[in-house]
Length: 207
Image 1: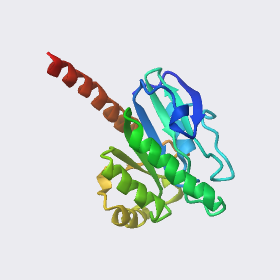
Image 2: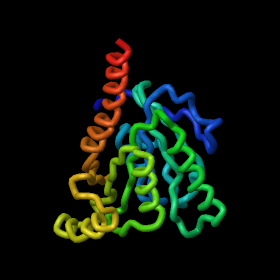
Image 3: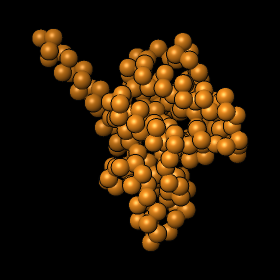
Image 4: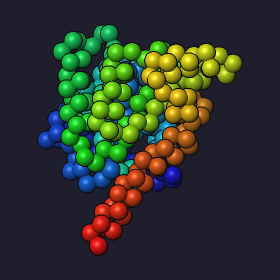
C-alpha cells in the first residue's frame, strides 16, 4: 500500500460527532503509552500527524484521520493508565463500546501490545468485545526494539498465553527502526479489500 496523503479530520466523543461514515475505517486501540500515535505516524510517513504526549491518557476522544482520501484511521483513547481519574477510565469503556457496536463501516481494529508487558484487564476485555462483535482484529506487538532479538521469544510467550492467539497472528513493530511497517500496511490493505469484495458480491446478488 502506498500512502499518498493523510490528514486529521476531527475528534469526537459521541456518535453524533463522528464523520459521515461513507469510508471504511481501521481503528487503533491499546493501553496508554503503548505507541498508538507513533505507529500511525510511521504508517502514514507523517511524524507529527498524531500528537504524542509525555503524559499518557491525555487523549480522551476518538480522532479520525483520512488517508489517500479513501479510508479513515481512527485513534481510540488509550486506557489503563493509573493516573487517569476513575470517571475517565469508565468513560473509555462506554466510548469504545459505543463506537465498536455502532460503526458499520469499521473494517478492523489494530490492537497494540507492549512487548514488555503481559496483557490484562482492558486489553483482554477488548479482545472479547471484538470477538463478540465479529470485528476482525489485527494484533500488533510494539516497541520490539526495546528487547534484544535473543530475548524476543521469551517476552512474546506470555503475551500469546494471555491472549490465546498464535504467534503468526501478530505483527511486530518498532517506531524507532520502522520494523513491521509494511506488514501492518499489508494487513490493513487486506482488511480494506474485504470491503471491495462485499460490494462486488452485493452487486452480483442484485443481478
